[in-house]
Image (tube, rainbow, N blue to C red; front, side, top):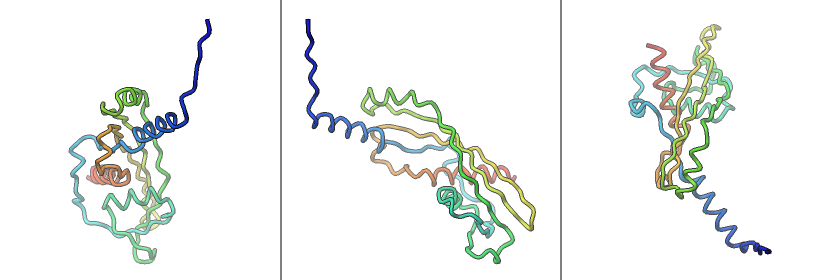
Length: 169
């Protein structure tokens, strides 16, 4: 007994690939936990700082979005300097994505990720290392295609603001 196996035509394969990419790439959003942190505001006065290595674009953008400091391009205008370090990501398990694919995106899936954000605060030659663990969950859901919560730097900045203020108090 012979089985005939025929490959689907190329247009079907391309269509399936495009649908898969659509479901897995554009249908995500970022959430901060606990929920109380989502509406945090800066309660401290903003200090003017100079960022020594602003070439770390992602890390610098997170620091900007945190609204903790006022930035200057001239290192002589302030006594406080910030040295950034690359952000480290500790991703969660990706197994829930299987349910996402099976249900064609109709079941929201949450992937809790941990990030380690650190910088040195240098004031008058004294270095004060700052290290923060940021818990940002990435949600995959078909209907998130229509949301605007896809800015990781903004969410990480909000969480950094809360963590920094908690550490200062």
